[in-house]
Image (cartoon, rainbow, N blue to C red; front, side, top):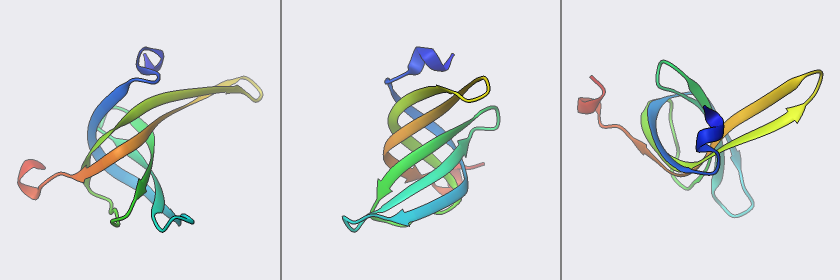
Length: 93
């Protein structure tokens, strides 16, 4: 199924986990995290000027799938995000 969405724009809602931030030379922070909707998890990369936290979010970006061979066939599914928006507390329930 990931092949169907490769290089396509997507909007995904889920919970952030494994949040990591790395300062960039342009003053923003490159965040990477796992985003899960409870049925599947995807890796997300985003440049952000505001801090992110582990919470429910809506991610808008481009879906991608990278395949490589190391002792078999492996792939990474990833969203390169344009925006990450926190879901208001009232909509989490």
